Length: 323
Image 1: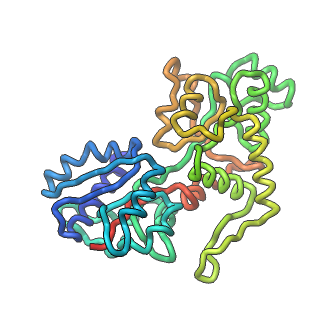
Image 2: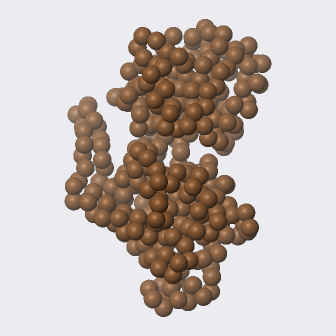
Image 3: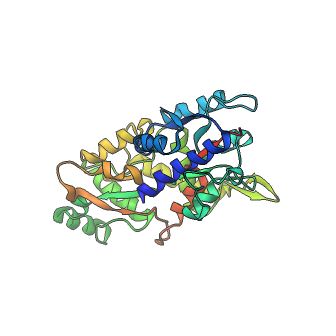
């Protein structure tokens, strides 16, 4: 699956190159495992097409800044840019709709049926597919097996809460288990998403949709705020309880810091992008790493938050400027 996603990104580059009739393709993307893997494939692409690719990798927070400065209606420093979904409204007016990308010569144009409907929906703005998803950025939930399978902890937990210690199935269980480990100084009970606007955005939508309300929706051909205030407050109040058992500096932790806390035994649970999950495996024993868990709902029924997060805030897109 990983190879398919990477190949799709290069195919998109090929179609843009044919359209623009340029010798050099300038690409801007964030610096993480996916673009670095794409970078390793560039020599093969250049040999097959005859095009030169300049791939510039920047920290995530710098990419949108460089995009808004370097790509306008009048000029562009880049031919292809990677954009997180939340920033699509900013750049959509300057980008070539995906349906207008040509078929390509050396590489056929990648089809919309090669990604999930939710990912494709994330690439749509004002009824137009403005780019092609190259990273669904699906978050998974992880718990520490060495903690939930510890006989002593299992006995103490059941005596206090009346049910078995396990991978949590509801928000209530997540909070009670996290509180159990946090109060005993064993591990912090909740690993939030990440620092900065992307993390806050993801966590807010995670809570709101889990408690039954959307933030924004298309109504009458326009995007409007549809937040149910009562449900939103309920979600945020519960989120505060989760953050109360998080690391003391949780609000300042990025992905790498959260993963380090989890792998060194300081955390009990962690949400992480699926592509980063292998890096969360503790080095001392693979048995500590749990199976992935989907985000969960207060009712005990697994929430449909994964697919909604995919649509709502986290998908990354490959966008091409008009020639």
